[in-house]
Length: 316
Image (cartoon, rainbow, N blue to C red; front, side, top):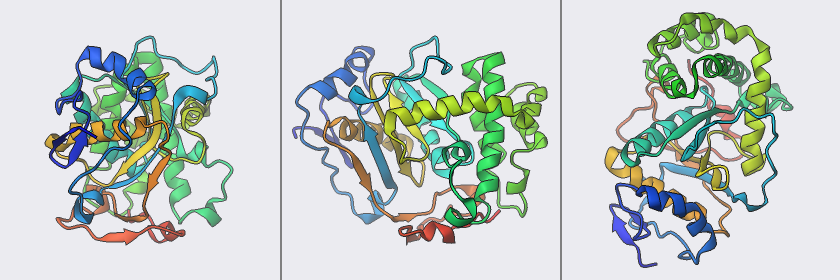
């Protein structure tokens, strides 16, 4: 590969650290899928300390994915990125903060769409397959997505970013407090998020309205139609609907402003190789989020393999 090295990442010479211009963005998806890409992205100088933040990325190229249902809520506007989020997923939250940085530096537009872990795992036995507290957490995430779906229908898609950020203000960014997690999915918690996002608190009553589950399930199925079903959150589509879609990348901390775009370029180039399927490791650090009490200067690496997730019970 004859790429240039920006910090730790080697990327294509045509992709600059500040992102691509509009012409490059229009041609990038087709170019990377159809052309003779460099065989692999060489990630240079990455020891365990640097690379441990990257846990998982899975890609499904658009060529053979199923057609999405006609009744899925569609956008009237072309977006560069579609980000499917469940508010209760800590890894989705970390990745979303990174994508916000990327969008700010590259002028990419982002459509914040829905995926529900509760719906994704509706056929699972929570008592057997998950630690205590996961069913309550997944359900509270679904309840907040009902509010988001109501807001989107009445106020438009532009409020999704601020509403997701407001959820973070009133959960992920807080200090650890006993019983805090139990407040999620309530009308009162939704009201605080709505107020922070500059929205009427009356939308909060949607937490108890299961009619919105139809919309959320349709978008969950749309996301899964692009990646396959053996995935989690978040799911990202780049240059949708015909571009790349993948689960992840699962990262445990938000990259710096300086590293945000080089990391994005690296992920996209790796995912663009037609033969790429999956990269994963179970040795990782816990997501670095204030409410989890994990913002240590030197996080501890743990092996999350073979069901050890059961040992990572919600602490709040």
